[in-house]
Image (cartoon, rainbow, N blue to C red; front, side, top):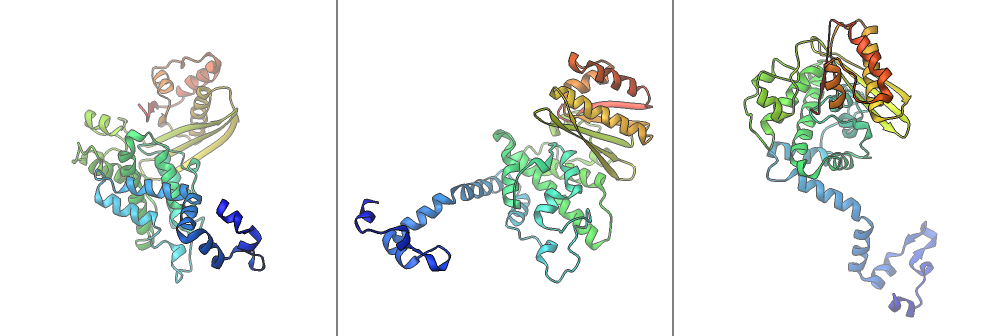
Length: 343
């Protein structure tokens, strides 16, 4: 910088004022030399380059199946023929939700079908809470939200979700079939058990006749699955807290026809446990209003689900009254069981 000061260069002399405050390349490069200009640009864009560098390390890791690596490479480079890239396609709506223009970010994150799939998956995620203005940044933030010791498994699982969502999207377009949530989730679990880094269970035919469980207890434990009795309605609940405001969510999936619906609510609570109980209470009232007599309720709170499964109140006196209401509503169902998908 002292060398530049001695030559009396100013910002005004380096910027062409008449061209919208753009740098005068004829002066900048000779003064700073091209190497310094490139280094300055790399420093300015460091975070962008760093995130992409990490993403490529994740997907091309030797433990990741090549099929997953190639698929993720295509998706992150936005090389998929989504409708927003096809100029000759007039109808730009997403075939899974028919609500928004189809692009990579919408297909794998913003679509309602995708949101429900992520929320009810093996690694339950409220996907709209993952930031990212493009598919590459979204994927980087998604993987970064998990512990570093489990990156390969998470990358493989996300690749399986992307793959099956893409297949379902193609079926909707080419075969005019409706999105079958139940079948897509079964295919994701099968693909993950086959392509997982662990690969202990290459034979997963037992998954075909059960939505989230099977006849093999050890396989359920290794894959993080939960044994569930046969009922038509399975309800997933969750609560997202920010200070005293809490967003409640419940997703009901009908195993008999593959249909799914969701319900949300914004409330104010005093604790995280109270929030989870409120989500379960909302789900039970919702089920009663719709005359769902046999249900399974799944929550990410192991303490709550274990207590309710035994007909007891969770150990939290502040939410004791809510627990009593829930225990009273349970008696109105023919079958009402509780499970934790993080057990």
